[in-house]
Length: 490
Image (cartoon, rainbow, N blue to C red; front, top):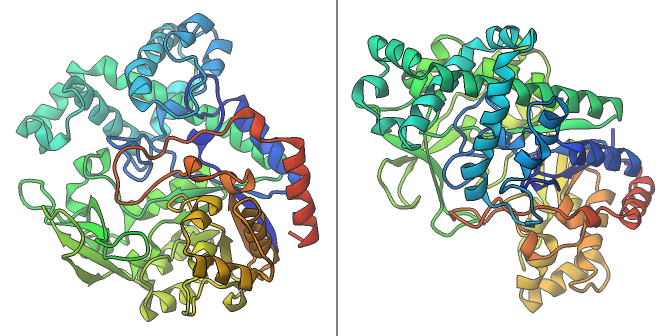
């Protein structure tokens, strides 16, 4: 089935309190998708973020980001007042001020927590029991971390860092209220999310989530499941994740995540991973698996290196992993992020799984070279993007091209384009392609420049900040998107 989607991070939605969330703007965005004929809303990961604010470095693979809690919903439940929400958080910042969110939002949320605990909902305890397999470790981890100024678990006292039973039991007593606070946050995140998800289903909009292949070292996942990762006896990584030099970075990308002990995971049929995927499919209708090639082979960089120039490829779990996924969880709608250095073994794995891979049009124009990202080379079973969250916007990308490359783009498009017109011509190229799914970042639909870029890989600071303005989703934009979707039968 030919269809069209939009890439829009939750944090990039407009909202009243400084960051996009599960608020009325999210519901309006679903209605916008329905009116235009967009069938898929793709998001970035929605877990709680750590230093650097990257959604791909989360404190948990199962928890949601408390920043996404809709404060107006808590006001409607008499857990907050409007004036309390406005204390320091109200404003018209077009970029997210994460430091302000971290410093002020939790103070506001604690007021709601204390009121809630006076008369907790009957469903609260049931929620905790249902999610106990991850929630209790996560809430304890966050409570201990908060009490120590946010430092990594490896900097905690040794008995807590290594989860000695006596120390864990004592921490549960000491931080009982803080543990409850983090359970409360997750309860409301999940409740608001479920309501939003039902609304999307009502309007025929499929929610496409994003699951990072790796987890952050400073996370409840690693702290509570050290045996699943390649760590030394003191809990430090022996090797970390990344990728060698590619189109995104000349020195490669040093992500720093600990790598999985795939041999250990295989012994219980990848139970932790199966639960992680199952859990995500309770939240989303479809999933994009980030860095799919890491299941075929992964790049291991010695711990402590400053970049990704040194490292070696290691064999991943391969088709055995995905056969277990199918046997245990059934046939799932999965998109494989197969960008970067793709070898024959990765292509063979993708074909064996049957998942659609990704095609990015910004990679389709290397002057004087052929590219698998050129639309005339596509098979139907793929998802075509003008760009991803790691790319510049089309408009910004075009500005950086040499005159020769710009001419190549014009030759391929069959018409002369300018900085003003190139974005919609690239959208047209994606829409007209044979790819079953066409996914366009909202910034490209709005024809925005580099200022609207989400992320520059291998950099820290200045990323994940962009928010859309309420005035940018216009009736004229709706008409333009809808007419193109109808023209190309998406």
